[in-house]
Structures are given as C-alpha cells and as structure tokens.
Amino acid sequence: MSATLQQQLSAERAALIAALTPRSWAIGGSGHHTVSAIHWRGPYLIGPAEALGDVEQVRLYAPPATPPPVDTRADEASVGEREGEVVAVDLPTDVAVIRVSGAPAIGQPTDAPQSEPLKLGESVAIVGRDWHAALATWSSVRAAGPAWRSRRGGQIDQRLEFAAEVDGRWEGALVATTEGRIAAMMVRGPRGRPLGIPTSTIERVIGRVERHGYLPRPYLGLRLQALWLDAAAAARLARRSVRICVVAGVDPDSPAAAAGLMPGDLIDRIDEHEVDGVDGLRDTLVQSTVGQTLRLGLLRGGIAELRTLSVAERPRP
Image 1 (cartoon, helix red, strand yellow):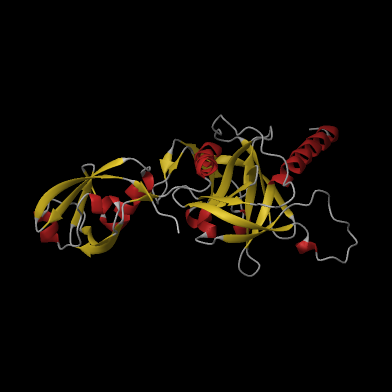
Image 2 (cartoon, helix red, strand yellow):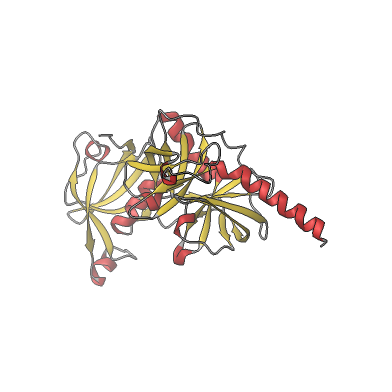
C-alpha cells in the first residue's frame, strides 16, 4: 500500500473515531475506577448493568462540546461532570439505562441502530472513555453466533466476541461498524473476554423504559429459601436436581397469595419444567413478562398440586 493510501486510510479512521467520540461518556466509580457509557438518544445513556450493581445515582463525565484549552488551570476532570439517575438495571441482559435530566443538550441522538448482525471477521471501532480522555481501538469480530441466554437468563440476540485487549474502563464502550453505525455495547464476559450486547437487545430494554419511565420488573410475591435433598429424596420425587426451593413467606395482595401458596410449599416445576432451586426459579422469573401466566407445580405435605399465577409488576417504593 502506498504512503498516500495509508495516510488516507488513517485519516478516514481518525475521522470516524472523532464522529463517535461525543457519544461515549464515562461513569465514575469508587476510587479511580471508571466504566464507559453510550449516549443512546434523548436524555438516556446505556451502560453495563453488572458494573453498576444497585446504585441509584452515578457521576458522569460528558465529552465537552469543544476541546478544553491546552493551557488551563481549571481542573480538567470537572469539565462536563453531570449527575445521572439509574432508571433501569437489567442484569439478565447486562443493560443499564441512565437518565440525565436538567442538563444542557448532551449531543445528537444515535444514528439508526445497526440492523444487520455483525459478521465473523468484520472490522469494528471500539470507543470508550475514562475520566480524563477518550479511548479508541480497532478490532474485529472474533466470534459471531446465534442468539443465546446469559447466565442470568437474559435473551441476547447475537453472540459476539471481539479480538481486543481491553481493561475495565472499556466496559460499556460502543462498538461501531466502519460505516459509523453503533452495533453493540462492549461488556466483559468470563475471564475478561470482550463480549458484545447487540443494539436490538438494548432497544428492547430502553423501549420499555421509554414507555413506562422505568423498567417494570416481574413479581410473584414469594420469599424463598434453598433446600437440598438427599439422593433418596430426589429419586422419590423424580427430580434430577437435589436443589429445591421452599416458600418461606408470601406477600399479601400478591400473585402468590391470590394463588393460595403457603409457607412450607416446595416449588417443584414451572410450566412442566423442573425448577433447579432458588436460582432456577429466579432465572425463570426474570425471563417472564408482566401479565404472563405461569403454572407452578408444588409439593404440599408430600402431595403434588398445580397452581396458576399471573406475573405482576413488582411494586415500586
């Protein structure tokens, strides 16, 4: 490749990164730890849910509209600092939605999301931000597969892994095609592997937030405890798993109360599928939607019973 073509390619890549950089924000954490976030549209940012946990407010660093002067005595970290409200944390998909209200314009909404799945080997730009500077690297799609479920039971529309060596600051970074379309949010998977949450998955979460102002969470009104069966008891109940959950309490005026569940009931199955302990029931619940009907198979005093519940919305404080 001639020097002129190399220069042209470099300039085009730099221009693309420059166009994407205003969409990337930083989320401040404890100490000097930060993660990235994407300005999605309107007042909403998208960030990594696992990294945020159960926080309700976050410190944000927004890219300045114009670069600050090089020779300045102002604290550079204070330029563009904002407060954000975490309005939704969807751990199954690892998507958090952050709202910035009462702030100046925060940049242009994202272009139309990438509609076509990323292809194996396709080149992508990854853009993030820490508290002091924008971060950018070029990578490629190292793995591309069909839809899958996360370990928390979330439906992810495409399995994506990128050939990038990145640290924790990049979690929540945007992944864009060479045409500048945002295709995914980067998160850290097992052993720190850079994985991607596709835009279609993100759109499902933020669409619900835009409709309701928050993320409705499914609710049955059960307080559960784990119980481990010995091999003989599991065989007698025809269970593959030795883990089963016992009802420790039932919230009043809840779907569980309406269905007549009582403390001491053992929850054996949901919709004919064996429930693998408390975690298995929670995984099933997070995959359900408000209004959905579930058939619970339970054991009461050693006798099998079937109850039908309608999933409600978890009451908000």
